[in-house]
Length: 127
Image (cartoon, rainbow, N blue to C red; front, side, top):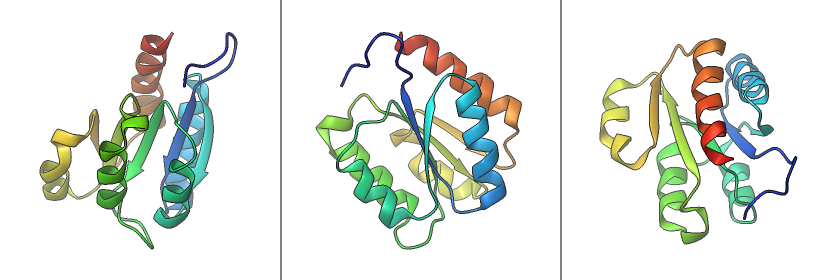
């Protein structure tokens, strides 16, 4: 769904580690997104069934439902076809197996500046 003029696009952060989640929320906010945070896959998936964020920052290792399952759900839902997915993981091998379904793959540790700058580029393309 297109955003109204002056309205910030939504970025959904799905990350179970509180310190990392805080960095991601602040990075995406500074890049121009309205952020929503979920720290478990189950609640994030429920939310994705009713909303269409512009960007999802997705950890692959989550409680309840894995990030891989969430990624599959996003990619199989036509409503989310334009949602950009940034996979964030420390598991390089796992990242390789799902990178074709992501718009961007970042290996942890990810810095505040790195994510902010990448997200700002995505936000600029949404205008």
